Image (cartoon, rainbow, N blue to C red):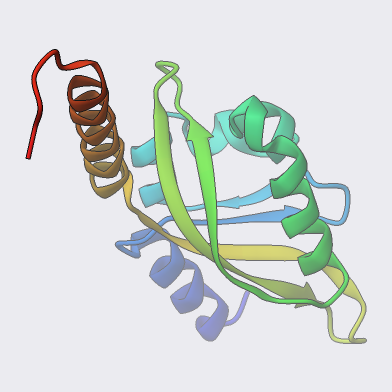
Amino acid sequence: VDTAAVELRELVDAANAPIFGIDINGNVNEWNDKTAEITGFSREEAMEKPLVETFIAPKLRQSVQHFLDGALHGEGTTNCGLEFRTKSNEIRYLLVNSSTRQNADSQITGAVAVGQDVTEAAKLDIEVAAMANELRQLVDTANAPIF
């Protein structure tokens, strides 16, 4: 393995962003340290597992599969929201960009995604929406006029 490949591997592994990839069958073939930290699944636990069925929340599996299929057909995607299921069955919200991976002969070999963990912002959005809904119900059911 040449020095550039080793340096690239170290860069991906140490990146402060989740980076994960799949082969043409949708199985995990890239899982950096940050992805392991966010999901609780080690690289060894994730490798060669079907990404969508294993790690994506059920309600988003179809749309995420569509997103990945696009990447596997040469269509990079930006700002796709994913809900990763963690080892402890929590949901982590990621905003990801994807790119096609190709070999030296320009044949598509998979896709790689780089993301940003937006879990805290997503939770805050959910809380604000719930509070707004409660206030709306309070106003709608009040026995007195509200101006």
